[in-house]
Length: 181
Image 1 (cartoon, rainbow, N blue to C red):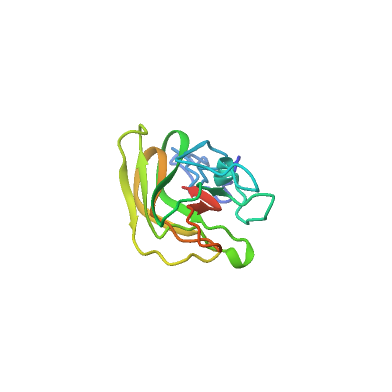
Image 2: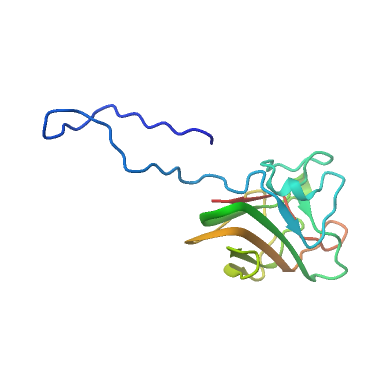
């Protein structure tokens, strides 16, 4: 969203008989803060439709060879410590993180973490956990929303500590898209 317009169609009269549209402040809620923002990762496949920048490119539908999203490198076991961090480029008030799984047909939801945390930080050093998930079932195509008390943060980090297997039995942390608002 680039523009917001407020149009007054029926105005109240002030004590002098004049009509005005007066606002102290306008706030656009629900803005997607992660769109096209830079990410850093513990590891990354950079090919075959997978790449770091695809985690925040706004494409939510995986298409082989186009945009699958982001994938860590293969882990030999389910127990891992793979992470992705989104830099919002400045302090932002946030209260939701949405994680969209990969959505490519029968592989939909593969690579979505089983055990993971969602953390926020003002300085990319000190982290606060806002969601802590264990035993998360294989995701469907819909984004998973994690809501929390509104907080000011610049960075959002998702860390997978136990990964699900893909169709070949290999373990990855894979996300089709990350959204923050």
